[in-house]
Image (cartoon, rainbow, N blue to C red; front, side):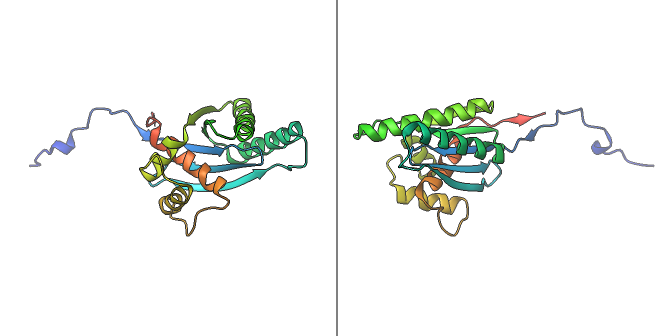
Length: 181
């Protein structure tokens, strides 16, 4: 005689929930140098790519914006991110710097919109807090934590590439968890 086990009874049908692996493209906008970093939202998060797009400072601004647009568009096409995270334009004592960053941010927003991607913007203090735990952390501290969190021997150079990874990581930590059925 066989004894019935509770495991012999089939479980009621449960929905099949799987965590999605989100790929976030972080962008640290700048007219001369724009950093980008692609991060996968696995556990632990993984950095897949980081780099910079540079524009020729001898060219007129419209030409530089076109160069930047082509570069960001190429990165989006190569990386196929799910979303884009961007550092917001912040108040800067240097008006020229604020204007340049604003122009570069606009180009990044346009390239993401053309690719049909959602864009999330974060203030610098939120990015620093998400990565270091301190919203007033300096660039060195952010770079060191980026290297540590992604298990890199050293932080990507220049700092704009490392900052872009920090922006992507900030989004992963701030975004609501998505599940797929």
